[in-house]
Image 1 (tube, one colour):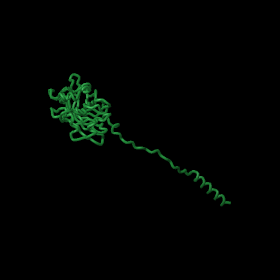
Image 2: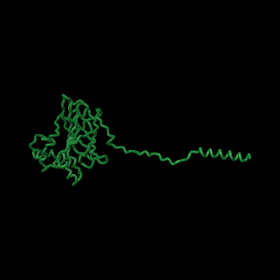
Image 3: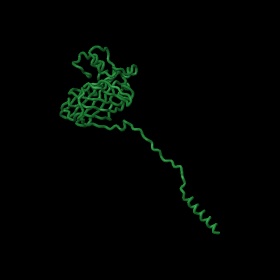
Image 4: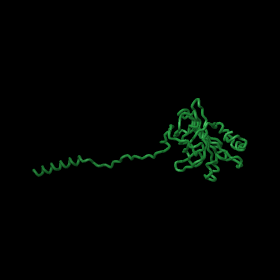
Length: 245
């Protein structure tokens, strides 16, 4: 009888331990996906004074990139100041071949210097190309306007020879916010344009340097109405170099 009771007690204890033992289950935990960093989305607008900047010259290079490939084009800087209202208008002018020419010959050593053709004094018989005007207008430390105008000898912008776009992503370092003396204004920039510059595929990253003089810039309407071929034909009659008549 005692043996039966002992066996029964052991059986009850063992049963309780078995029932209290947690049942193992195959639990699926949610996977954490790593997102890729988008350099455009993380690009932060900035304009600031940089006291370490030095003037590098009014003849500058405009660097174009798509994040993988980079090319440079020749550019000229001109500025127009409004001393009374402390406003400076900065314009970088550059030139590249037409889309048709780029598709045919590709980029060559001379492709980035198409702006030089407008300064030709008689050697060239004709003019072809796209001419860009990167235009920045500053009042004090505020950007009033930041645009890129393009004018071509061909109807290559959706059937038109002119297009403009606002640039909303920028980083600008400048020597001063006092524009009373234009030659004291210089700096560098990095931009993200909503459309390609037109030199090669997806060339939406623009970098470069600017240095001011007290000159005159071309307005949007002047560029839009500019007859490039007529201006080129009359270049020997112009007093000095003028891209816009």
